[in-house]
Image 1 (cartoon, helix red, strand yellow):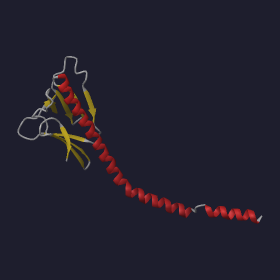
Image 2: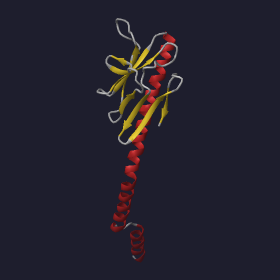
Image 3: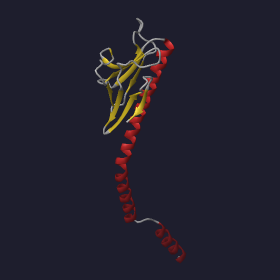
Image 4: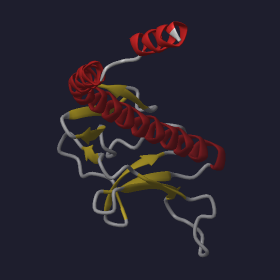
Amino acid sequence: MTLETGNNKSATRCAFTLIELVLVMALLVVAVCMVAPRMSDFIRGRALDSEARRMMALMHAGQSRAVSEGMPMVLWFDGKQNACGLEEETPPKGGDPKAEELDISEYVQITPVTTGALASTRFNNMPAIRFLPDGTIDENSPSSVVLTEGNSKLELVELQNHTGYEVGG
């Protein structure tokens, strides 16, 4: 019988007490509370970066289509619907079969910015970037596109030689 009692004592020594479990849980809660805000900022920044990459891909597609098809292409921005799209400037009667539309994350705001006194390029009454058949960008197109999410901001800036956009400040 003493052997059984000895086994019971060793079994209780290996287990955690309720107080120890509560203390560990409290430490975990404190750690999560400290890390959570930074993680949300990180995730938000990744979403903004992802949208910028998608926008750059659509810009490259528009430029490639303009050169390969020999027709001007427009990349329009719809701030109300939080979307943008790419299509021929003068589509055929049935519409542009290769037209693309990109829904932007509801948390990201897109703002095309035009500098200078020139009138901004518009397509269907929306601001637009116009890609010319020679691979350049129309001089009346926005000089930059600002993507904003909360306090984070990312800017796609037109290159000085008017051949594309790059991620800037």
